[in-house]
Length: 156
Ligand code: FES
Image (cartoon, rainbow, N blue to C red; front, side, top):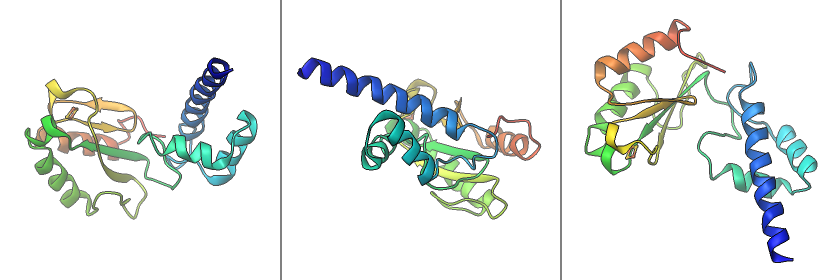
């Protein structure tokens, strides 16, 4: 019985992640999954909305609140921190005029600070939506911001 329960839970978790990903990455999603869609997911998988929200809270890629077209996620774990992630964060924050968790008034950028992105040997790193950028410098960051503004980066 326990094994069956765990296997069902694991399958539901995989299904949730798949649904989160497809809902959030559709065009004009504002990079988030609204409550009515989270309720739909809960109903589809036979879960409560609290369980769906609980899973969502574990994954920084998904959000229950609207975000910009480009979500910049700067890693602030140890390897990135000792490789100047704070300077990268402060530069982006100054350039965009937003702090962590905020979105620009034009809804283009959201700035987030996250834990290890799993690429410590290439620190400092950040993700823009679901793409990882490594060995960042201020020049690279400048180009990435320009590319986002010019529509050269993948957006939702
Ligand atoms: S510490 Fe930044 S990717 Fe691991």
